Length: 543
Image (cartoon, rainbow, N blue to C red):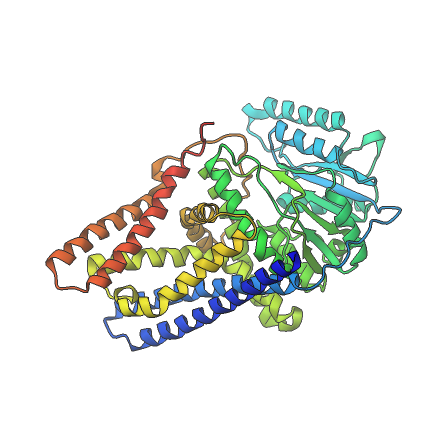
């Protein structure tokens, strides 16, 4: 009976996904034909082009999500193979965390969780990447005290400590650690091993954690067993879950946003061997990293760039949707926006490399992998799509600039069915993973609030302007000055002005009531999303 219910649910999911894709294409065809038949001045046509491109972008990513649902539905209909067993003599595994001026209490919790791992053949390392040689004179004493505290902490927990001359941020640190463990030693390498070890122990697998991520004791067993059974696997990614969501609005919203990604999207990518590394809570095969020359150091999202190198090198990847670690999410808007800027800059910046590789060697990867990487590297361009969708109703209500939003019959005939079914499928599928509609909306509102940093990151990436690496702050919550949120609040105010002017036009002009009404509804919708920034800017909640 239980199997029948599961098959029924996933059959419904597959049907819903196919209906969503079909309605999306019908809408796109009708929308394109309408645009081609539209007259008007040059600026009206220009705005129409931007709007059509924005809708095409959103539709493309919507189709991508629907395809992930189809893949997951097809996978779950097949019998699950038995889990591989760990060999009698488990291979050596290096468990590392790279730290850059992280708070001592954060490092301590992570190292203690390393110590509690139940895997029998583990070797634990703290890679201290703090720049002690590049601090202001007045901070020298404080940083030396911090260094001594890190030394004492590593010794107390029983974790080996590695340092080197700074370069290449986290990717450079891990590559230097790999070189050191392989005997490629440089004079600037500094190593303090437990029990007097002069070099890291030989290891077959490398497990990477961020400083705020704490693995459960059983993190390694099943992952190592699978790596041993599937020799072409370069890495297995596991999800991230935040534990500081109960009293912090930003952390809760960020966690829910992450959860949407780590559910169907990652599972769907994994079924087509297109899952990319997310930087933490991941196990690598050392041989695969050595084969591609280590981590990519010329990107602020070294995990995404390295994944492309591994897939291009014919290595496989996988995703295991099982919570095996917990960590801390950004605790204020400032920290979250810095994190999002870094991610957006890195992934959009990879788009240039992705296209270059495609035109140079289209057979380097399968069409499905190219498609998945294209979706991932363009996702943060959603900032431009969102900006266009906000501006168009305002222009129609205030300046009477015609756009699709001014034609009610097109809205009700084509867009309303597509929008309704899409939202229904989106909420229903995540409900199957025990997320409520409120959870989903809460996470997606954070994306809308962050759109200005996506705009900035895309401009930096297109101009090939590097961004500096900034660690996401932990342990503190501060409100941003309202001047830092000028774009969100300015557009929210424009939406209110457009609504007032639209109501004025309804009373005093001979206009389409439905056309004006639909645009007023869109402005109310956008105002609600943008004003949510004020709620998030006071992140701490009282118990």
